[in-house]
Amino acid sequence: MSDIEPTTPSRSGMVALVGRPNVGKSTLVNALVGEKVSIVTPKPQTTRHRIIGVLTTPGLQIALVDTPGLHTSQKTALNRVMNETAVSSLSGIDVVLFIVEAGQWRADDAAALVRLEKLRMPVGLVINKTDRTPNKRELLPFMEEMAAKRHFEFVVPVSAMKRDNLDGLIAECASRMPEGPFLFPDDEYTDRTMRFIAAETVREKLTMFLQQELPYSAAIEIERFDTSGEQIEIHACIWVSRANHKAMVIGRGGQMLKKIGRAARLDLVSRLDHRVDLRLWVKVRENWIDSEASVRDLGH
Image (cartoon, rainbow, N blue to C red):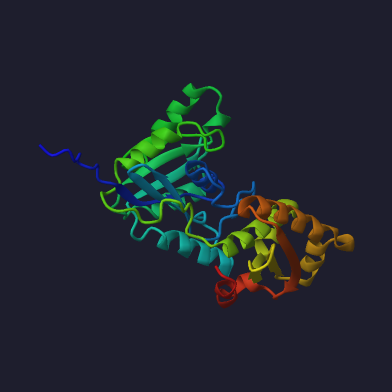
C-alpha cells in the first residue's frame, strides 16, 4: 500500500462584482481579500477601472473582479467607457455577484439587473450594508422581494464594512469554482502595479477632500515612478477639465494640493512599506471627460 496520500485538487476561478454605483463593491472586495485593492470613498463612481483582488487560501483561489458601477446616465464619454468596462469585465467569468444595498432598490439597480439577463454563468445575489438594518427581521421581506426578480443561484446578506457573513459568501463562491491551477501567484493580492496603485491613491484623496462635480472630472497620470533610490520617487499629474478646477485643486496658497499630497504620501508609505517622495502638478485638458479619445488616453 502506498504511503503517498492523494492530494486534494485545487480550485480557482473568476468572480465579478456588479451593481449600481455606491453599493459597496470595492469595500466588499477589500474585505474579502484582506488588503486594500480598490480605493473607497463615500461618493459614487469612485471605481473607474476593472481591478482584480486575489483571495487565496489552501487549495482555493478566487479572483474577485471589481467593476465600475453600472448606471443609466451616459452623459459623458467617461460614463460610457465606464459602463463598457463593467460589461466587458463579465467575459470569462465563472460566477457573477449582483450587489444591492439592503433596503434600497433604485432605477440604476434595475438597469444593472437588465444587463445580466442573458448571462449563462451562475449569478448570486449579495445584499450588502446589512449593518444599517439593526432589526434583521426587517431584511427578510426585502430579501424575498429581491430574490423574486430573477433566478439567483444563491442569496447572501453581508456587511462588508463590519465583515459580517463573509465566510458564507466565500463558501458559496468556492463551491462553484472549477478545478484547476491557481491563476495568480499565491503571494499576490491584485493584478495591478504599484504605479497604478499610486495614481488611484492620489485620486482617492482628491475625491475625499474636494466636493461636488470636480472629482469626477479629474484624472491622475503618473509621469515618474522611480524605485532606484533610497526612497520611491513619484511624480503625478492631476488632469482637470476646466481652468477654474485647477485653482480649486491647488487651493489658497497651495494648501489643498499640499493636503492631498500629504494624505496620499502617508497612505503610500504604509502600503508600499517604503519611504516615498510624492510630487504633484495640476494641468488642464479642456473637457477631457467628453472626449472618448482623451478618456482612453488617460488610462480609462
